[in-house]
Length: 420
Ligand SMILES: [Zn+2]
Image 1: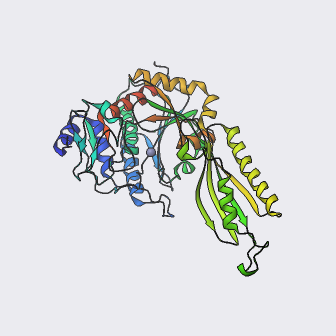
Image 2: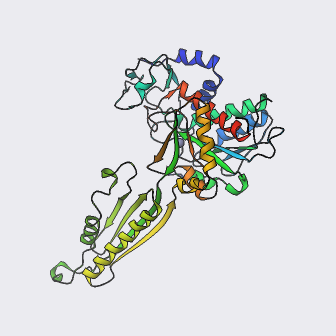
Image 3: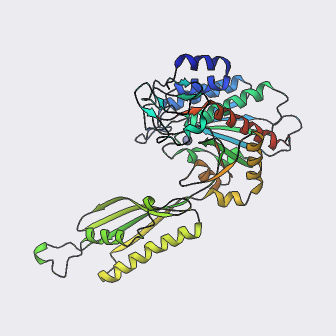
């Protein structure tokens, strides 16, 4: 099957949420890891300014701060002033994996369950996107197969924007005080640091930034970064006998001593790992950079100890302190924080049910903005957006899933207002 611009146009004529999504998708907002600017690209700044003025036009106070983060303030509806303030968060930027300029969404109507041929000739099939066949009968938004659709996270932004519009127009929509946050540079790992948790002052928040409909991300890895430094003893090879300590060899030995079956390529589910991602070595010195991941905080720390034990062993063998390990906390499993706030997940589950979606609680083998924000005092699980195959030209968005996302977020707001 193929996508059609005409069908997308027709859909936008009758579906405001899809229309909002298309407008957002057309705005180029890719983030750029190589940029030192905040935000990393002007496209994000431009879209953020447009959103702030659009939301201002709805009658809400909306501000774009110096980092580019847009925050909209919605006061509680009459009678809900005593309810806890909540945050809805989505990111404006899109991933750098495929071109983000000139995006023009197309619609595959009444998907037949087979493969979808994009204009570029690329084909989305069940191998690329295993969830796709289960969307048989849906209308699915795709790109031309060159550009990145950016449903991650324009779908989340579109849903929150539509909800703001409904809040501004529908007095019967009961709601607590809300902060809507449109963040920047999420795809290059900078966004959560730009969000001022204290200033938001919310009891909890959600990021609307997940994938398949029904998924609720409630746990993430806990993460440490480690650097192993090795100082060799470099002498001329002619006189190296029993004298030289080659840091290259030491680095190789260190990596050999890491448990083989505890590497990303050999682990899945809730198993943690050690991952060496960079090695620099010469005879004189070496540096091994790695990341360590585990869902369990104690096990994560045991992994750090394991590195220290390997270093000790090598130091003993060499007869001097040639290996040292430095480690740095990166982020914590949001599940540990959410455990202390069971009412947050309870409300999320209820919201999914109210929206008619089956909840599948997921442990993400990575981090989300919510891991960082939860660690800083804002419990923050991640809602699905419905987007599939993110981070490449195969990305697509079943329209029904996008609406389910809208319904779930809206239900959550009503639940927090004591309405459901
Ligand atoms: Zn995202």
